[in-house]
Length: 324
Image (cartoon, rainbow, N blue to C red):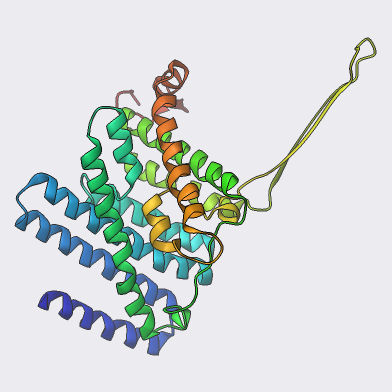
C-alpha cells in the first residue's frame, strides 16, 4: 500500500510539473496510462506470489486485467477526443501488445470463456466466475479514473469526472448487435488463425488487426460502396436491376466498436441513449454471438484450407515453418 501511495505521489508531482512547464495534456494522459499499467503489473505480481490456488489466482488476474483494460481505455477516450484517431490508434496498438505479453492466461473478455465451454476446454461454472471477476474489475476501476480526472491536472480532463455520459449506440438495437457481432467474429477468426499458424510477430499482427477493426469506423466513416447490376437482354422475359449502397466503416457511428462486453459495460452501461436491456443485447448478445459463430466458421473446410494454405510474398514466407 505504501509503495502504491509513493508511486502515485511521485506521479502527481511529475505530471503537475510537466503540465506547468510545457502545457502538454498528451503527456499527462500518457503518464496516467503508464501509471495504470504499472499498478496493474504490481498487483499481478503480488497475486502470483500470494495466491496459491491456480483458479483463484486466475480470477484475480482476470479482475486486474479487466481493470487495466478499462482504466486505460477511459483515458484513450480523452486521447481520441483531443488528439485524433491516429494518436488513439498508436496508443491502442502499443497497449494491445503490452497486454498480450503481460496478461498470461487472463483475457478480460467473457466470450473467450464461452468458446472454451463450447470446445470442451472449460465448464460453465468457471466461465461465469471469470466473467464475474472481469465485471468487478471493470466496474470498480471507474472510481480510480474519476479521482484522477477530478484533479483536472490537464484542460482535457476539465469537467470530465462528473459529466453525464452519452451512449454510442446510434442505430436500432438489432443493427448495433450485428455490427458488434460481425466485427467480433472477424477478430476472433484472425486470432485463431494466428494462434494455429504462429507466424513471426504474431502478437504485433494480432494487435494490428484488432486496432484496425476498432479504428476503421473513424478512418472510413464517410466511405460509401456502390454496387449496380442490370440485366436487360433483348431476349429476356424479365428485366433485372439491382442498386446497392453500403456505408463503410461505421462501427464508431453505429455502436461504438467495443467488441468486448466488459469494456463496453465499464465505459457505457447506464449512459443516456439506451436502456440496460438494449446495452446487453448490443454489447453482450451481439459480441458473444459473433464469438460463438467464429468457433463454427473456423472449423469449415474452406476456412481451414484458406488459413493453412501457403502464404508467400516476394519469395519470403511470413510463417515459421516456411523457408525464406
